[in-house]
Image (cartoon, helix red, strand yellow):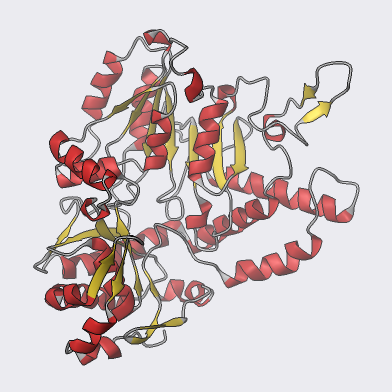
Length: 491
């Protein structure tokens, strides 16, 4: 299967690039795919040849360039809809820079946002106040955003296996049965641990209670099939949103929102402006377009960004989701088998092996940012440290009670960010090599084995809130020569 992805790998921009660290020249080993995809040369070649020479504003078909851009833009939107099993009954919005932007837009379009100046002036009866159910694994974009709406937000508790408890979910639905608007807005996959959610089953359950199901595919849209309209009754999805910048070839693209047309009940667009009206005059009220996609596409749309999304989707289809899954499972298993045997590091959610190719690690007596800095400087490995914008899930993973949470918050507010919970996230991609996986495992073992040395080499700059290499300590210490020679052969 490695061979299947070799031609794809060759097209990744930067695949053989290096940088100079304090420990010598290091080849970049990118293991941060959950945060962002990478640029892909064939897509850039296509954009240079077929798009950029003809760039012009859309909203016209009377010139060649305007017509060409409009046609490519519309074709791209249709391609993206087709990719997720959407059709004439769904609306697509391509906007902002990722999922965060489009979910905020969606919440406004649904009429669920109220400006804070009016929060204490308007009382909403309990049965009129919407309720939103989320999982314990949500990214902030599918959690914090809902907290800023008029909705009550309820977390579906995990079961004993730390997966979404569907029995508990149904009990919650019965408790909130009187609410006129019930929404389940759930992640398809945790961006921390890669653990999947049974979102189609969640959809089937909430539809029995006349509710809606929205799914955040930001984490795994580049790797899995998405079907808004499966044949199984009640398992359809009312809305999906994702961040195409996480696709290979996707950086620089827009966020994507696709939802059932009947959810749109607005007479005024969320983003009124040029391209949204059919008539304005100084004498009477203006008239908006009736087509929802046109009405919500005010101003100059991100047509270049959307064309890029479609090309990234085509590349995903070229790789094949079955091939992607098979390859990622093999790579993850290879890394897992090495890391689970190491003392001094813990895999988060170790009991759930079936997951997206993400491994988040907690190192004994080492700050996650220090580890990430060491992996970068000594090995060229691009990982990511922090809470992965999933603070509530972090509480669950760390077992923090309310008192412990308050203590950490008070420390952070008082200026001590080092107490913030977090981990080192390593995310894999099917284009990676077995030798790169082994190299990552060797690097993790080296960090563990040389913990005390690394802790003397790196200091924390409180003003900049980052770790840095102490040059004086570097000169004073005896450094294993393998740090200076650690590198990957050009693949």
